[in-house]
Amino acid sequence: MFKVNENYLKLPGSYLFSTIGKKVNAYSAAHPDKKIIRLGIGDVTQPLAPAIIDALHSAVEEMGKAETFHGYAPDLGYEFLRNAIAENDYKARGCDIAADEIFISDGAKCDSGNIQEIFSLDNKIAVCDPVYPVYVDSNVMAGRTGTYDAQKETWSDVIYMPCIADHDFAPQLPEETPDLIYLCFPNNPTGAAITKAQLQEWVDYANRVGAVILYDAAYEAYISEADVPHSIYECDGARSCAIELRSFSKNAGFTGVRLGFTVVPKDLKCGDVMLHSLWARRHGTKYNGAPYIVQKAGEAVYSKEGREQLKEQVAYYMKNAHYIYSGLKEAGYTVSGGVNAPYIWLKTPDHMTSWEFFDYLLENVNVVGTPGSGFGPSGEGYFRLTAFGSYENTVEAVDRIKAAKL
Ligand code: MLT
Image (tube, rainbow, N blue to C red; front, side):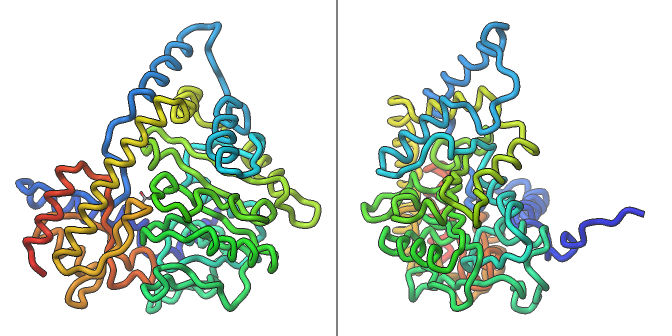
């Protein structure tokens, strides 16, 4: 008789955004007359930029002719895209990353879930609290997290690094030494950023204790302040301790197109073993690559027109972020984030729990956000709103929340 992977049975509830989706759909079915504004999941709403649409069209044309048709993509991804990334995301920022250290994929969520496979089950992970749930859940599935304490909502074998208001939502170096450290900056869900000097401390720490930092930089396009690093490789020594995950979802609106990449420098070694070789082996074995037409669209992100158009798109979302931040602050809420990230993190009013506030907003003003406690115990009493809605909906949502006068 077959057996299932029992680690899956340890997972409490469903994936956060699936739970929210179900709740909202149930409310919507019961109240079909209500206009619900969704500022929950960080999904983009603006159409793809014209430069990207043009690239998609011309790649589709190529696929229709025998002489320009493309089958399986190369294991690491097409060189035209890896070169564009190496040049624009790394060399232009003074980071020493070569094109053959870049692995193209269909997104940072998959990579951040899959990357733990190349590490031993004995490794102890450290995560920020609150945290993007994929990092923890994918380690639960692998059997790396021990037992779950339903009361505390924590796993016995995970090191939690509380990100609290007193420290501007930045994690502190943990007391217990981890093997793998998940960091995401600009941060999802708090919208907080850390300076280059702060990130350098983490790089120095990881090199000192022999840990690997899994650095999720999916939101780097939203950075507006000069001392906030766009890549961990801006820090000295990061090549020997850090893997970076990047996405085209948030900077270029590819949530439905699917494209991302992971950087594994060749200096990152465990004894003689390069993590680059292990990830290359996994990629080659389990993955057939992002589609040619999508990789061509990704290349267009780095064209002159693409860059200009996407700068405007990011500015559009950041105008929303500013509207949410200032509107809620005016209304007396305690708010943060929204300066280097498309997320606004607010304290729930009147000591409501995160889910109580979620229900309150859904039922009374028909606005959907994300309960902070869904990201970890330190998220309790907080709530996340995304700036990825349309400007009109964002204004209406904030005005509705203000009018509710909690
Ligand atoms: C979020 O809302 O946290 C993000 O959309 C999740 C993701 O990018 O997978």
